Image (tube, rainbow over all chains, first blue to last red; front, side, top):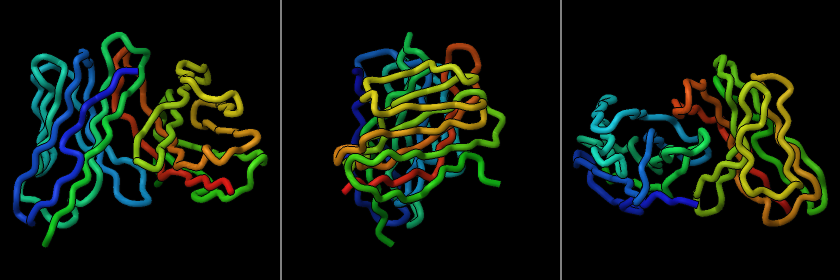
Length: 112
Length: 115
């Protein structure tokens, strides 16, 4: 099936730094969702994007739906230790039957 | 309070056994999903029901059978468990708005270990 290329695979940063991660594909997407998963928990929805070019913020988090509809990025500003976790992008391929395809995740570690 | 709940949280069983995982959502959503997360944390959809009708059925062994008694519940029954079935299984729900996927909310997961 279609895959999303999520990068980076992992990040080790200092508290206070800004973080950026993205998902790209050769295919067109209708929806982008960004999730955070902590150990032993289910993914928690952070931001949902539905239109090309859409830029949405949720506190220190900002995500954008790429103009080409083939990519999306997530930025975290002024990271704090509780930002630690795995961040997943998920997208709905154009023409797919109401199905999300997930990226492989970005493991974020924040050093206090 | 819990939006999407699953039981049990942990399930340890032997090969060949049959087991079920239950999921309930109190969000009033009309669509529910089962996902499998492997040891590398990759999330893959297995099934989806919309108003008790199966709408997504990925390439999953027929030992796995979902059942939706009503739109607030989606259970997963697994027959003849194999070692490779060990994973974390997540239930999720969303409200359908036309053809576009909207926010999906996940349960806490069920960690299945087959010995």
